[in-house]
Image (cartoon, rainbow, N blue to C red; front, side):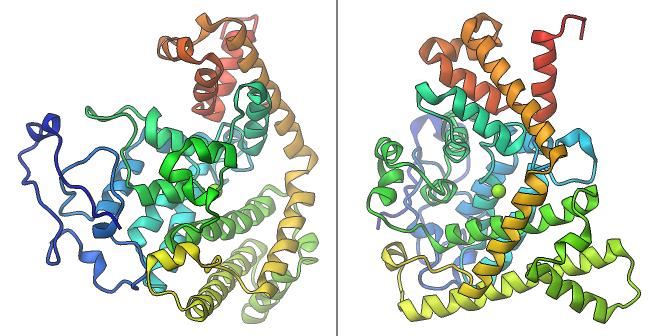
Length: 405
Ligand code: MG
């Protein structure tokens, strides 16, 4: 295991008067290490940053990663990117931003209970959707289709591209210069062809290894968050009647429990009482099953986690219930005609924008024109992926509306 590099590049040394510190056993910058499980990721054993930097003290190194993500432009854009409902459809629906915060909240609970690195799980959770296009999965599918002959587009890889290259905030490097383990966690999946191009970061896909438990937690915290808030939003929008949801055992069971506790409860509160019970059941199930798997596998070190089977998991019974829950959402919410109408519109907007910029790169803003000289389709994909829903709609009007906008 390589120790975190803390040497400071000459260029940075005169930018700061902070002391250059090295990590040692009594280092003040590692308060989170104390009660962690032996297989948790810790700052001192991190595989480091691409560009060496001074210590993050008084923060931990992973707290610094989290802070850089929160301060990034891509993170703020999440506020106006669709989860299921396009932003202008209502003020109270989830957006990518509130989704990411909910994922981080669940992931931190799980990480702390399992004595894992909470800061790392939080950082990965907050960054996991940075690469999403406008208009949710409809946008991703449309952009991927446009990029079919140019290497494709995948939001997960785009999240990595943002934190490694596209953010322009620091003098000494492009991107956010995050720790290896944070970037490893952001890259949830990756086709083998692309993994070969990613060097060390792609290695685990080629070697069929698992990421840290902190990263595994984020995958399932993501699933818990979106299933539950999509149900909540679906009910709020009126697209799913509550009676229909009662066909799903996971929902029906917890709704019944909520009714027994509060027989006179009005619908809005009943929904909340039900959803919070489901989240609690999923989180406690995940904790119990993951603890069992960790004990059974007998892992003691992080290296053993990498070669062990996936250790953060639901029980088979809960997995089955979750499958039925997701199936319901696919059939009744994501394919609801009112959602599909927006999906079709979104696809057209993305395709029109992509074609217009491919036909004439001079229509791109100057910064992207420069990038387009190196690789036009990729520069266009970066530009479009970075748009918020409303910016994409406005840009479409600017390019295609005959009347003045
Ligand atoms: Mg997500």
